[in-house]
Image (cartoon, rainbow, N blue to C red; front, side, top):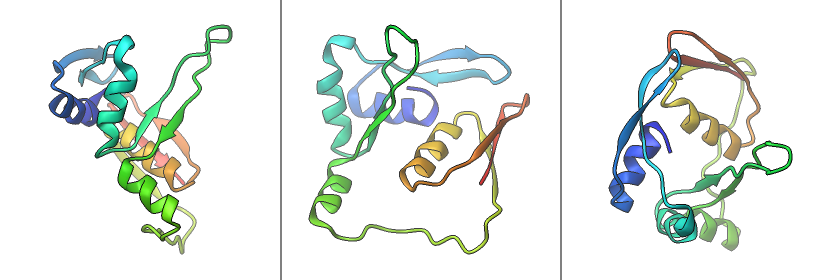
Length: 130
């Protein structure tokens, strides 16, 4: 996990928070969990947060992301209640975020089925046009 996700997970799961150099971004906070305990850590995270896992397909090297909703979001979905919704009235938007914030925005957009063209900038910011 990287950036704000790493800070949140490290605090919740009592993990060590460290940094890693990312080209054209600088050092970014990160943390990881032991592979043998993924299920336990994921379930603990789901108490408060949705979790996206992206295992790598061994033969193709492609990532296969899947999202597990937080327990609260799952309960809302299972009950058929309406969660919050966003209504788009104009079709052209642009958001520029830091490289650390980009995965959070991408996950929010994916959850709300918003497609985007993503443009990376060398200054460490990421612009989403949607």
